[in-house]
Image (cartoon, rainbow, N blue to C red; front, side, top):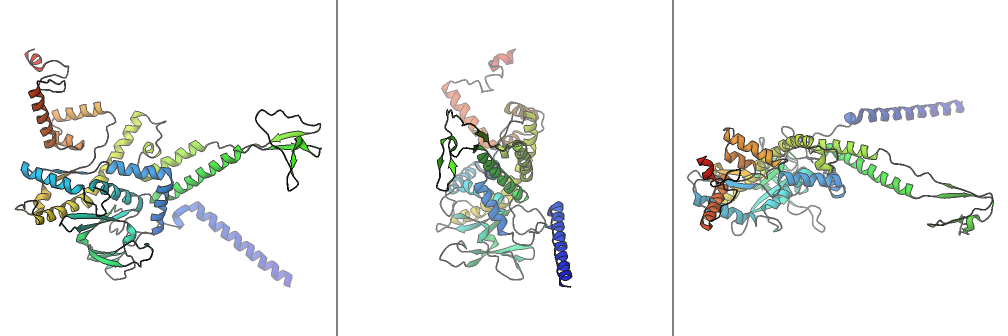
Amino acid sequence: MFKWLFQRRSDERMHSVRSDADLARDRRNVGLWNNPVPDYSRVAPNPLLRNQARYLVANNAVAARAAQAFVDNVIGPGITLLPKIRDSALKDLLLRRWNRWADISDTDGLLNWYGQQALAARSMFVEGEVFVRLLTGNDGMLQVQLLPPEFVDTTITRDNVIAGIEFEGSRRSAFYMYEWHPAQPGRLPRSIRIPASEMLHIFRPKTPGQLRGVTEMLAILGRLNDMDQFDRATIVKQKTGALLTAFITTPNENPLGAARAEDGAWTASLEPGTVQRLSPGESMEFSDPPETAGYSDFAKTQLRLIASGLGLPYNVVSGDLSDTSYSSARVGLIEFRKYIDAMQWQFIHMLCRPVFQRWVELEVLRGTLPPMDGGVQEYMEYISWAPPAMQMTDPQREVDAMVRAIRAGLMSREMALASLGYDLAEVDAQIATGNTAADAAGIVLDSDPRKVTQQGNPASISGNS
């Protein structure tokens, strides 16, 4: 009776283990369908994702290169201000005041305005979001402070507060931010309410109604970690394979003149150039180190998937140009430029324009800029922004195409210069100044179309002929 009972319970346990194993195998086959990514549209993102992304960017070469490539292409030397004000005196005054402020914009005194742009872009790529606090200094000038996501107090529980953000209807009305870093030792975290007019929330919304940003690396975090582990395992495997071991089989008590160790085992060593005679009956065998075939193909495949998940070209992420032709690189850069253009203008809308508007408001109050009839909005109407231009893959062909488009009336000089990151009025002024200086010095440059043709002949001779 007891034997039958114990046997039945044993069979039930075995059946349970098999069922659990089958279920686990089915989940692995299905993949993430049984473990979907949480919906971050109405809740704060999991801090674990942010910490994983930070760790990979700090310790993984591919992630570090991807983050730097994103910042270099979206921000580069900075998204610059291009005033379109017709009053040249007011335009010059505005630019002088703006450039002077751009050097001292950082509350911490570490970066200038363009460095803060780059840091904000990096934070958005790695952490998914960044908060920009607009402060007023003792002199009445604008001060900009960047805050990481952990400064948001998500413990506030109210009907109109979600993920640390207070709402009036569908619009943000305030943010609850810690006064100092919540992990600062020796100080308990304490949050304050900051009106939305004094805070900017920079992130990339990917779904309607999204409240908080999620790292741009979300789609490839697991793949990056797996590839990192595979790379480390391959290195260990190669190190193990480099440990060439020899095994001596002998009927003698002392093989190859070896010495007896403390544990009683015989040990011998080989040195370069050694010629060792074996005693009768002795033989030597060597270990067979493992090989790492297919590592390169696997790594390239993973890097292509990672680059695709990040929206970056493969050669930008990997730095590998071995299998890249000019035509394929050009096609990839065309798609890359579309992605970068979208990110740049999102930064302009969410960061540059609000910061400039607050700066103008404070400068008018300080009396350093004259008020306009239409108020601050009139200033905003005459302002444009110039993101850093993408480097040309074939300058001669691309410039020739611009010239033909201008001559055909398909684009203006202003549009062409804006695509290169320049201001038409500034370029014309520099050209006029350069021509005046060259004429006064009696210099005729080959680049002066007023006097020299493209073939290098004097323009007057060309006209007479």
